[in-house]
Length: 448
Image 1 (cartoon, helix red, strand yellow):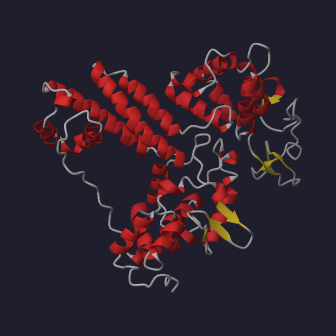
Image 2 (cartoon, one colour):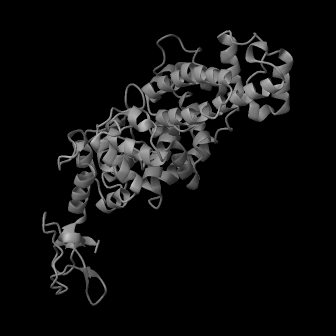
């Protein structure tokens, strides 16, 4: 009852509930089915539920019932949510979602005002996954102002984490650290673009290890202002790998005068894996451009990695509006100015943009993201995109490093940096690592 398309018997585009002699789906008229499947309210031909209503009309009635503000009508502030839900593909999935008793409870409470229709009002509600999805829908329909999803999840985690700290002084210190250091940094990053999962995850690790350090120090009979060099040395010696995240907290304490100026071991920065050889990168690029069996989304992402040296964290933040197609030239805004795409990459991304309108995700049709995620209004998780690339044999980090090192040998580092959205210092460092230098060129002589 969900098969739709062109009937091979009459050519009509409609529901195909019957079968012909070759077991091919056909319409009810060609199959001589006497029962009709038209909704009594809107006339849509499809699966009918109670009262001979289609799934979308049933969804509308369910929403009116759940979001009744006591007047028999939907609470006015929630009307945009109703519109957004009714415009989404697959109304069946929305009906299943509404059967969740927690979803129904939250919607009723928001409609009647027992839960304030604010981010703060939702902050203490449970279960958190249900609340998070509902909040995403409310932001996507502009009922609530948009706030970074990962930032909200970190705030919720922080509240729960601090509630487990029994020592009042430890609680106060960790709250100050998280509020004035962690949250400030996360907000600054969120203003530039959606946070990935790695940034809040790192903040959680640092906050957790800060609490572990304070408890460990207390067991040694010291408070943070009494910490000695022997304490720090012992802390880092016992479990150096797991305890290194506490250094962010320790440096903050030293900088703000909360502990003595003691020596911390140097931070170890993991070096990137060696880049691909040039012939290997080009072979991968040829494969993803020519192999139609690979997912189109993965091919586009791989092209941006291998040709334009884009990290997956930046790729998932590209908006549909960042791609411009004037019928002749396709450009993508990675930096300034937008980069023109050569064929066949241009054709690949043109086809992908068209396909985005038909993605099966709930919010894809209205999403502004070039790589929409499964959650309303959210881009694809960069970890998921990395996994997709690796599945088809593309190592994201090594491929990107190889591409940028080749590019900075072909044009001045500042030009490459500006066009691809890199910092000048990063591009200059990569020039040095690649064995080249632009200092040998006279000022202004960078066009050859």
